[in-house]
Every structure is written in structure tokens, then in C-alpha cells.
Length: 138
Image 1 (cartoon, rainbow, N blue to C red):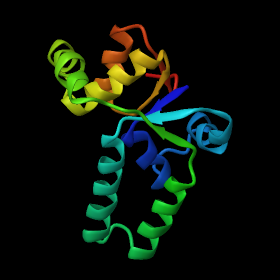
Image 2: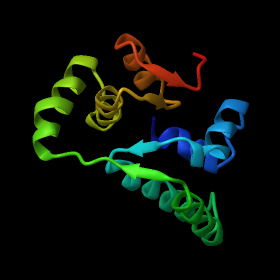
Image 3: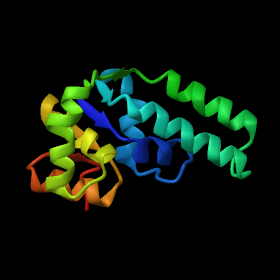
């Protein structure tokens, strides 16, 4: 199981990171179980809309990216308000992360999964907590 964060998904969509490990993650996505917190959909959608608004991508590219993401076998985890208050918020405080990043970290810990992220602070927190990362380096 792999918790997929928005930074890695967007880098893949925009072709900003074509390392063999990331390419394989998405090429073999149907063989792996990808899971995301609910906020992932908002984060990714927001970046796509802003990119289109700023002229970085065209409306047609935005539609293609949305379709590419829709085709990925992604499961959205349930996150209750109680879990946000009792688990994610304290984790954000302890690890000095945003609550958004702590949601990914918490899900990774809860599911005993790999964390797929390019976010340096989130990667560092995952390492401090003994979690497995994708891509492996850094």
C-alpha cells in the first residue's frame, strides 16, 4: 500500500520528475494500492486550476490531467473530525508540519504503508518516524 501525496502526483502529471521509480509507480499503479486522504483531491484540483489560470497549462491539458488522475486506482481514506482533532493535529504540532502534511503522515502510519512524496519536510518527518519512502533517495 502506498500513500500518495499531491506533490508527487503533480510532478508526475506535469512531467517534472521522470525518475524510473516514479514512472514505475504510476505505470504499475493498477498493481499497487494507492490511498490518499480526502484533502488530496482538493490540493491537486487547486494546483491544476491555478496552473490553468496562470497560463501554465491549457484548459485541454487540465481536462486531460483530470482524466489521467481519474483513471488511477486511488482509494480515498475516511478521515473523521475526531481523528483530525485527536491524531492529526497533535502529530502536526509534534512534527512541526502543516495539518495537511500531517494528514498524509498519519495515514501512512495508520495503514503501515509507504509514503510517496517529494515534500522535504514531510519526508524528514517520515524518516523520523521510521516510515518507508518513495522515491527511496534523499
